Length: 144
Image (cartoon, rainbow, N blue to C red):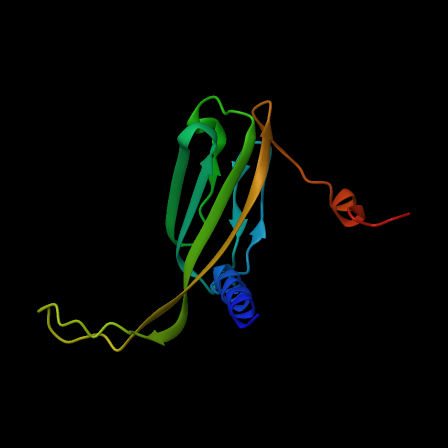
């Protein structure tokens, strides 16, 4: 019994560690039929948007200030399916550097900017992004 309990606790701990602790980037989606973009505000810098999709599709855009956008039309014909995005950025907040490696390049940095991220997915059908219906999402799982 103790082994089973310990095993279950280990699985739950690993599962909760899998939820990304850096998922605190506050950005508003600005999706059109073919463009993925965000409004992130001025609190962030060094933003990178990465999109992956069916058949090995991968696209990345970066910006020092302001959230980057990717126009899917520029990637050629898009396959229908599920696409994933990740938006990463830096904040002004400083966090301690845990690596005390002396790489021979002078003084060590005591702190670095905190990294934050957000991610999600969207669907493409017929070469266009399908807009999610918020009303349909709210009703899911509710019994009449």
